[in-house]
Amino acid sequence: MILLANGLIALVALLHAWFLILEMFLWTRPIGLKTFRQTLAEAESSRVLAANQGLYNGFLVAGLIWGLLLGADGLDVKVFFLSCVVVAGVYGALTVGRKILFVQALPAAIALLALCLAQA
Image (cartoon, rainbow, N blue to C red; front, side, top):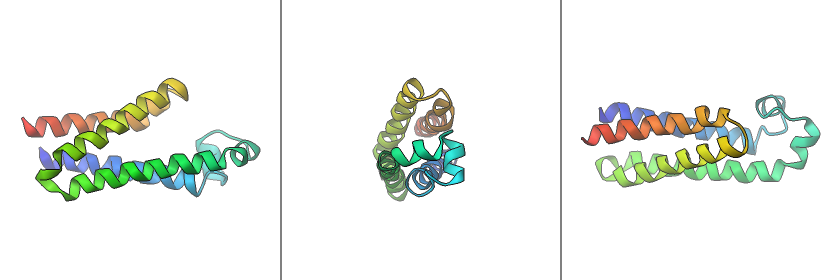
């Protein structure tokens, strides 16, 4: 079960690495405009804020990878960073759009559940 949990954690980390790339480097490109349903003018005016969001996603990725690298000693780190992702996803769903709940919070919640079940 721990292999499944760690695989799900790695998937969450990959998702957030993709969010980092979208927000920091592709925000004003066609894929970024389409993903976030913005015009080029809207994207240009929010570019710095998006890059900041991307940077925070990078911190989440770093924390999740750190937890994975710690192995069995990384349980607390994994729980903390997965919880951060869930909270951020719920907040995003409430303030930006419901889709964030399914794209961000749900995968992290499933990984957190798998991690908890692996410890039982």
